[in-house]
Amino acid sequence: MLLLNPGPVTLSARVRNSLLQPDLCHRESEFFDLQDEVRSRLLAAYDLDPGEWVAVLMTASGTAAIEGMLTALVPATGRVLVVENGVYGARIAEICIRYGIGCARVVGSWLDAPDLTLIAACLDAAEPGRPFTHLAVVHHETTTGRLNELRAIASICRMRGVHVLVDAVSSFGAEAIDFDDPSLTAVAASANKCLHGVPGAAFVLTRRRALASAVCRSYYLDLRRLAKLQDQRDTPFTPAVHVYYGLREALREYEEEGGRVARRARYLALAEQVRRGLFSLGIETVLPVQVSSVVLRAYHLPDGIGYAQVHAAAKSGGFVVYAGQSGLSNTLFRIATMGAVTAPDIDRLVDCFASFAPSARRNDRRADA
Image (cartoon, rainbow, N blue to C red; front, side, top):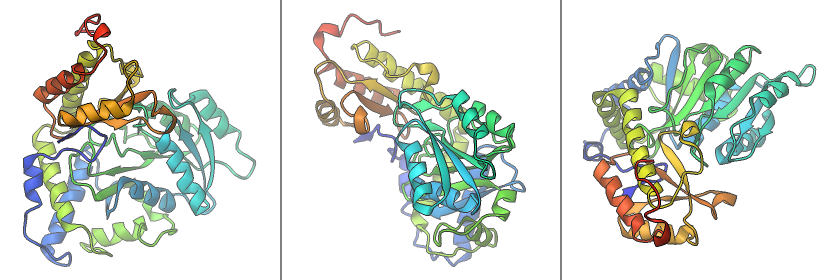
């Protein structure tokens, strides 16, 4: 079964075989060699200076990395403006609320880009004595496949001295992130998205100076403690050793294949192949390609066909596609192109859709649209 959902991904044979390595105690030097290499390669994915940035590893999902980032890097007196135009922006706000972290929300339509003017106005309208210290935003909002304007948002924050915290769970390793922008303080991400690792490992990349003043709201997700011990070739808890084996192998494969530039080009080619093929069947993207990621795109459900039928037909052909979330479940479905996916796989996918797409609309579209 080929996974075209937004993670976990279909693994390469090389990464899958890496899980068969010998059992390893997490207190042995061999494990710390493994941990060191993974942390180093995560920084190398965006050519980051290890003197300025640190990769903090954890055995957890991407959501835990986001939770660790928020709970550690927002001080007790801090306040977060959460940019919300999808499910994952809402999740950030919910985490802040659960921990009693002061926050406000800029809520927009799930089909629209964040309103930059409104973001600036909200930052400027903070109550006297209660300024926003941080802004949290999802880079790639997989609710719709929109790639939010991270650079423009960071510029607004930079001019106001606001620190930017980024959910890059489904963009890290493929889409551009401007780590040189001084407002960008940390990003949270996961092994099992664009890096093609195994579920169960997540990480936060943060500036060391931000980590130096981190607070402790969580025991397990205490970034400062995790980073300190990892820098000392130690670990506070038992990590998922074989998952780390998989992530190391995935990062080695990632580098050998050309890193972020090559991975983005690969995704773009596959995403465009999907778009052209489905367009020839009368199935169109929900968002213009100019504002969509190369990782995942959302498509309108064919006329008269519900998601359950789309999913069943795709699965019978050997593919798993993804439903729309919440109120969008009746109008769209989503296809990701991460993982061990090839152009012939996409040809088969389009053939599968042709078996149930409305025949009246099959031939009235140009395949090269």
